Length: 114
Length: 116
Image 1 (cartoon, rainbow over the protein chains, first blue to last red):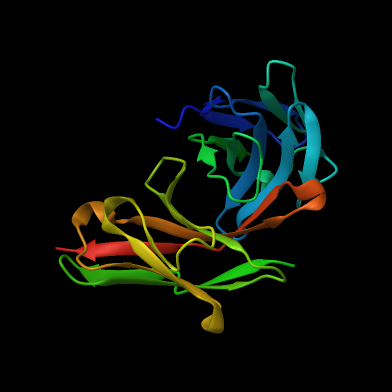
Image 2 (cartoon, rainbow over the protein chains, first blue to last red; image 1 turned 30 degrees about the vertical axis):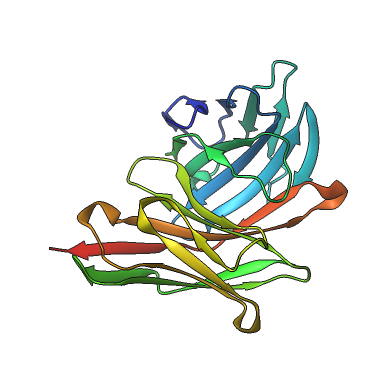
């Protein structure tokens, strides 16, 4: 158990809809990362937060947004969903977000857009 | 821009045989390098990391990796494969993003199959 909790584990929705994925980081970790894993794109970095502030942005679509709350949990919002958004979405956390730190990954949310 | 290339999306070895998973990196500055493992229906777990202290890095479950700057490689090895090693393995490189914060780029992964 990594200590990172993601909910829900599975999500099935329709095109055009909006969903929210939730992540609770490991106790004491201030930095949260979101990754998208799909068969064709592999593991893609989306965005990183540190103590409530956005710190790095990767290949995140404009239809997607995220935030980290004062209690350090994070939410990833996906809107105007398309079939191609179907993927496994991972949240990871680390203590301070430094370059040499180990990432602790949650078990992921499997999103299926029908 | 940093990147990693994993050669071979699928590798099969016999139980007890040597495991060799290849990773080459590209980075404009001395990198931090990682190997993560993903078991079915689970998130990624760190196997080992290189942070410039020693070129040969030992990790969990008997795995080790050697950093070779001249070859820009960080191959993962294990002397004797176990059935429990069947999983997907990801090489990753970490570089300082803007503001000094971590930006990790993962390779496309190598699925290891262990044959009894």
